[in-house]
Amino acid sequence: MSLASWFRWNEPPSRISQRNPAEMVVETLMMELSWQLKQAEKQQRERENEYRKIKTGVDYGWLVSYPKQSYDISPGERLQLEDMCTKIHPSYCGPVILRFRQLIAEYEPEVQEVSRLFRSALQEVAEKIKEEEEAKKLARQWNTKNKTSLSLTTFKSRSRISPFISDIKTISEDVERGTQPTRRVWSMPEFRNTK
Image (cartoon, rainbow, N blue to C red):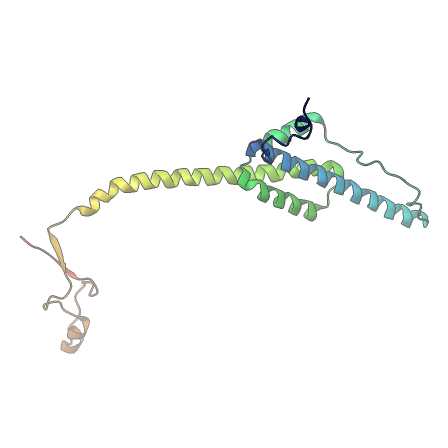
């Protein structure tokens, strides 16, 4: 057995991550959920301690030791949330986290409500993704229809517009003569057919 096999100097450096982006999105979003669960639990304990301190007038918080994390979501709910996370495109991972944090800051939820807020943030972004995909689809359809209708713009008609013909009457001429103007719209040019 050689010494080089122990230190693995001969092996090429491995890449940082061999996982696909969808797995990384799921992992990132679920890490955010677990962190927010811990934070909500910590805030809930602090609120309870403050309430106890106000109620009893004595602070015994230094005596109490809390477990690292006592609340966790059920495995079935975790699987549902992970399934919802797989539907999120990697470019929307940041907006999901931002929206989730906004909801947490807005509602200051109890620990049990955090997963529900996470689900609503995922649903909002999934709906936004769906709307954008539909808009892109409509834009593509419009562009293909628009290309076919451009052939009509090359159609040449026999009528010509003559805006500077000398026999066009103006309102000022009628006013000078003292006659009533005709019912024609004066700002429109005169159209004549050329044969």
